[in-house]
Amino acid sequence: MAEVKKKGLNTNSNGYTLIYSTIIVVVVAFLLAFVFKALKPLQDINVALDKKKQLLYALNIRDISDAEAAQKYKDVVLADEIIDTKGNVVDKGEQGGEKAGFVLNSADYKAGRLALFVCKVDGQTKYIVPVYGMGLWGPINGFIALDADKNTVYGAYFNHEGETAGLGAEIKDNVKWQNLFKGKKVFAEGTRKVALSVVKKVDDPSTQVDAVTGATLTSNGVSDMLIEGLSKYLVFLTSK
Image 1: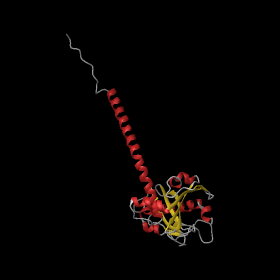
Image 2 (image 1 turned 90 degrees about the vertical axis):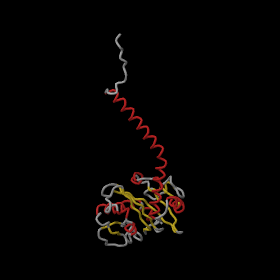
Image 3 (image 1 turned 30 degrees about the vertical axis):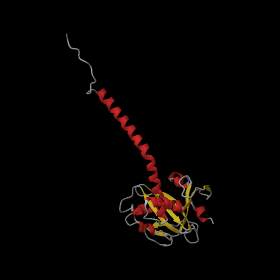
Image 4 (image 1 turned 60 degrees about the vertical axis):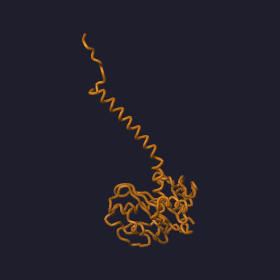
């Protein structure tokens, strides 16, 4: 009697390869989605902490631990307000706030929903305004801290996504350059025109900062960002 050959799964067939590949893709996709979902709360916390530290840097509060930064933010930021371009308060925010102005981004900024951080440092009122722009290779942004007169720069911090290391990236990495903004004026004397800028040759030391060496285009981007960004806050900055 002839032996009957049992049919089994042909692991060398195209069908098997396709099914196997599909199962692997589905399993990997599921695992990646699970890991992303599991890690997202931690990622959100880290992103928020980084933003808090950037705001503190603008207030000249640096070299502190993550735990200290989180507490310091609560202590010095009295409100994370949202205002419009007419200076109207849309949302008062709250002390150490993370739900109003704190969560706004460049899209809100372009739409005229402006974050305004009201702060108190050593008993003195300070205001921080975010600004957004474009560098040589991608988006740049910054936080400008102002004295109570809304005209004198108390401190500044800038960030970027892809500027050249050692050149354009200096807007973020070079604290000495950021410190050049301290004491500068937003407005040219006797005007309501934003004059705070970054230039290759300083003509007015009260409003101008030297460009980063070897990073002309990034510096131009910072300058345009300051003028355009601070102009959005013009009504607030010129109100009493």
